[in-house]
Image (tube, rainbow, N blue to C red; front, side, top):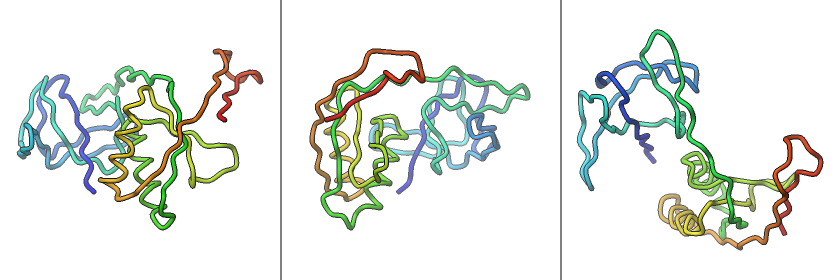
Length: 178
């Protein structure tokens, strides 16, 4: 399945096939086949300017908030905040033969920032705990796993008790999921 990363041109001029430096990945990347989208139409573009939003092929290296630059003096934009999840569910695939698609789907959806993945200590990925900010994200997860990855899945909302904010590394800072 193809993945497209959307990016905003902050300044300057973008040309198809140009090499940029991916700050978070620490290497040069060639951005070929850039596209602009309007409703259900896609069109290849050769140039884009400051303020334009384009889509580029994502081989799985881009994340939300990454910085791509051609500048000699390398810099990174401040990251986009990640909000603490307020709702949790245990999610598993119904058909155990679809484990590979389940893991791929869960990981890609998490990389896009739609969900956060939690695992119990010393367990595998047979059943995972998913955290979201809003309950509708569970419906989005179920729909995408079913339709994009062909994985029927079952989920059970988890009762949660969250510890208050404590300094990092504190023995008292724990999260319990029933």
